[in-house]
Length: 323
Ligand SMILES: [Zn+2]
Image (cartoon, rainbow, N blue to C red):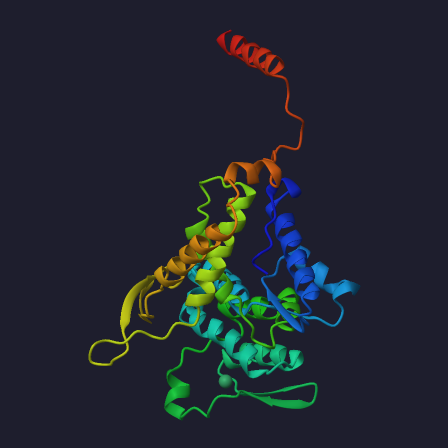
């Protein structure tokens, strides 16, 4: 998928560019004979629409749970700072965990996923057994002791904090999205790839198409060789840990430290291959390649004006400012 490069000049916005890249990626997979059964993305409206089209009928489209969770958390944090909603604050982390748990436990059953998620509005009030449509439902956790039940800071159904939780949990948009999260897929490794990509193609530098293509390929090689690294261990064989400040929770958290990424071996191998190839056939000079295959595109949508015309407009503007 990553070998599809879309140029800014091909589209009107970054969202449109994303859609073009996405479609090209799928077409490439189809061309390669890869049968796509499920695809997980964020909730981009244009991709949602595309995946509903006849062309992709039969391909399951799922949303990344982390993106949805982030959105729910943002809403809860915004409401939780209001004085009347303060009882909500200790529940925010648990609500987010409940979202992931609902997706994970539903094992591909969309209705089950929605029902697990909705059970939150009962549990949060300390109710673990309830009836809905003449069917009795229960929470999936173990039974609490009387002491635990007494100590938990349950919300009351007449509180403002509860109404906030209820409106977020039962929001028709989220219920619709959750139906597409029952396989608990996530796009986390894509986020990791994006950060590797940024090292090879920093946004502040303009690259021509050929070098963008080569740099993207390098990022793909780097990512594929380093993805799924083992957890690092200390000399005494214990798992290496690190303390990190979490922007999401605004506190320090302990994380596993993974083994360092390796770039040198594949880069040396590439250099050796280039040396070998250079013996076999003459290398194409980069300028020639640029001229022949990848003429410099202009990202402007209008034709380039004449310099004299442009200068006359500039001097007109300057004389206007002086007055
Ligand atoms: Zn419960």
